[in-house]
Amino acid sequence: MLEQIKGIHHVTSMATDAAQNNRFFTRTLGLRRVKKTVNFDAPDVYHLYYADEKGTPGTVMTYFPFPNIGKGRPGTGEVGTTVFSVPEGAIDWWKQHLLADGAGGLDEEQAFGERRLRFNGPDGDGFALVEDRDDDRAPWTRNGVAEDRAIRGFHSVSLRLKDGGATEELLKFMGYDKVDEKGAVRRFAVPGGNGADFIDVETMPDVRPADLGAGSVHHIAFAVENREKQLEVRKALVDTGYQVTPVIDRDYFWAIYFRTPGGVLFEVATNEPGFDRDEDTAHLGEALKLPTQHAHLRPYLEKSLQPLGE
Figure 1: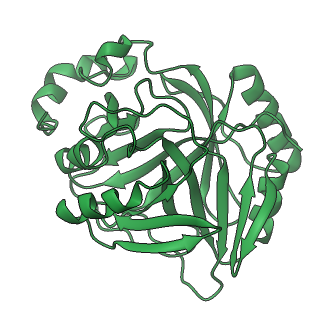
Figure 2 (figure 1 turned 90 degrees about the vertical axis):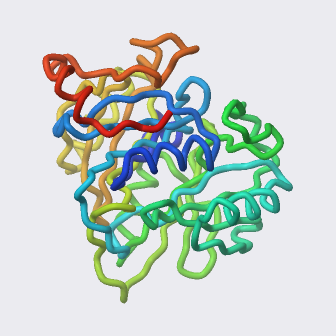
């Protein structure tokens, strides 16, 4: 069993409108945009990162806004719900705030002894807030959400699978323990994590596979401390039979990717070097940052990329 993985690093999803996406995460949810860059494989598309003050692993939501992408179809083989942690007593405020901002899909529930508020993002993205009295991570509060209500980071994600068995065994191999079960949902937690510690596996045998599109999660990334730990994880996964990519430099972390038995794309990302490698912390996310191989496209991209309405 691996011991290097310390919870969720980031979650990356798909969107249609970059300005709408930016507004929702910075103004509605109150997160900080910590990086404005482009997709490595499609440089005419933004890659936007939202998080706490520094882009701490476990707080980072990222998006590829493709203007002409079709809407995703929910189903199995994907991340169903991305869940953020908020302080105890905050959900009443969030319910009114999200309603006033026009968010759809609001639904309050109790799950695993936690008060939870489900809601949809601009592209139908599945989100939830969970009250967690024990989450002491420092929130970003300069976008209008007070400290006693502000998002602390990720709490969990849910995986929707036709058959959860093989993926559950993978999670156990990755260092997660089964800690609870409710109906068709099994909860797994990583000991000594970064606060974004839970993965829920929802088995849905009669649901058709998902189609990737706007509102879909593209992949979920798990955090390791550094490149040495990442190589240890990669070797263990390869030795177990998984097809894992070589290490890829993503400028702000190093990444490896592999497809899980249930169809979800997993990434393992390093906590180093961080989002301040090319901007100081006070000015994260302000300037357009380009990967070296796309630097020559700056004049074109600065004219063609959609203004974010900052």
